[in-house]
Length: 278
Length: 278
DNA sequence: CGTGCCAGGTGCCCT
DNA sequence: AGGGCACTTGGCACG
Image 1 (tube, each protein chain N blue to C red):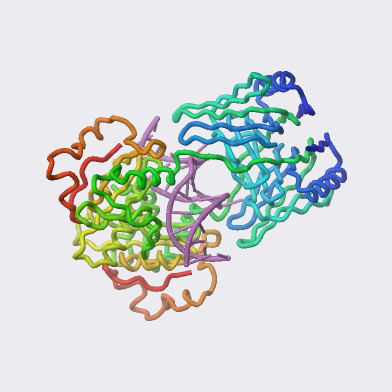
Image 2 (cartoon, chains in turn red, blue, green, cyan):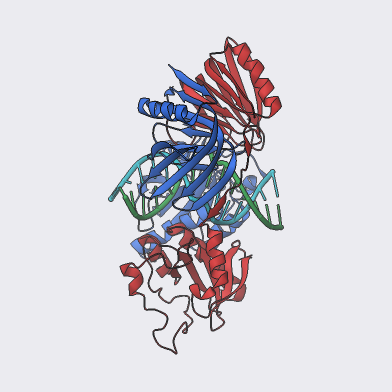
C-alpha cells in the first residue's frame, strides 16, 4: 500500500509522476485549476475553475465540481490516458473509440497530485433488486396470484424478453413484468408490448393476461394499465410481500373471498384491472 | 485557495480535520481501508478494501474503487455528513430523508485525508442535446416535413407532455417525439401513448399522425412504429440534418417526388410508415 | 413533494 | 459490436 502526493507541483513534476502512476496502475487524483473540453456523442466546454479530476486504471475519467453526484465531465472505462505539457499548461487527454470520444483537461495550475493504490473488493452484496423480487415470486408464485404457475423467465418474444412467463389456474397464459420501485407509464407500455407480442404469437382468439408487479404505481400508469386490460399486484422487492397496508390495497378483496372463486375467471384482455395504486 | 492534507493520520486527527473541513464547506477526500454499509431504497454491504471516498459540501457522497465510472456506493446531494470514532474505527455516516437512506463507511485505517477548496464554474456549455434538436426543427419545421407547422411544445395530454405538437400541410394534427440518439422500443411506445391520448381527446374519427425524430432507430422499434402506423424521420441532434447517407435513408423517396404531392396525403393512423431504420 | 422524462446516462447480459 | 433493459439510476422542470 503506497500513496504518492505532490503539493503545488510544477507541470513537469506532475507529468512525471502521472506517467509513473499510470504505469503502476494507480488511481490518480489531480486537484487544480482547469478547463475541460469534451467531444463525442455530444460536445461541451467548461470554463476555468478548481476541480477534482480522477483517473482510474481502467480508463475511467471523472471531473468533479463541488456539487452533484454526477461528474461535470467524464469518460467511461476503456479510454486511454495521455498527459503532456504544452503552452505552459498540463493537458490530460482521455480518448476512446466506439464511439469516438475525446476529453481534454487543461490545467493552468495543479494544487495537489496523488497516486493511490486502490485495491480490494469491488463487488457489493445488494438486496432489494428486481432479481430478488423475481426469486421471491419463483419461490412462492401465489404471491402473484393463487394458482399462478411460472413456466419460464426471460422468455423471448418479438417485443423482447419477458420477466416471467407462465399461466394462471385455468391455464391462461400470463406475462409478468417486475419492477423494484413505483412504476410510471413506461412500465405499463412495456408490459403491453409483451402482451401484444403474445397475441400475435398465439392469435387474437387466445386470451393473454398481463400482470405488473411492483411496490406501487402512479395514477397515470394505473389508467394506462386499465385501458389495456392489464393487472397490477403490489409487492415489495425486499420482502416479497405487499408493501404495507394502504387504503387502496385494503380495498382489494383478499383472495379467500369465496372458496370457489380464488383466482378463477380468467380475465379477457379488455377486462378491468382491480385494485392497484400507491 | 487552500488544501489540507494528512498522511496516515490517526482517527482522531482525521475526525478533527473532517469536522473543520465540513464546516468550511470543502470537498473532502479520504483514502483508506474501509467497509461500506448502505440501507435505503435497497440494502448493500461491501467488504474491506482500500477506496477513495469523496464528501462534497452539498452532501453528495461517493465511494470509488479502482474501476467504473459509477461509484460502488454513494449518497446523492442533500445528505448530512457526520463523523465519529468508535471501537477504534472512524465512521463517516451520510443520512438523508425522502427516502430515508443511510450510508455508513467504517475506516480501519486512513492512508490520506484531503480537504480541497473546489470552486469555479459548474455549468458547462453542451451541444447536441434533444433541446438543440427541437430548436433546429422550430427554426426550420420542413426538416420534419414540408408543410409541417409546430403549434406548441411540451403540450400536455393525459399521457404526458409531447415534445412538439403541430399540424401537417393538410391541417392534420401531428405529435412529434424527439430523441437525441438511436431509439429503441420504449420511444415508439412513448409516441404511441401520445397519439392514443390525442385520439381520446379528439375522437377516433379525427386522424392523428405520430412522428419520431431521431438519428436512427432499431429494427424492433421500426417494427413497432409500423404496427402502430407511426412515422420516422432521421435527423442528427447536433446538425439538425439527416445523419449521413445510408442505404436505408436513400431508399426514402425525396419530398419532390411529384409536384402536387409534397407532403400531401395525410396518413391515417393505421397507414404504413415509409422509410426509416438505422 | 410527487410525476414524468431526458441523459454524453452507465452497466449487464445476450445474440 | 449492437440490442434491449435494469438502475440505490441522477437530474430537471412542472404540477
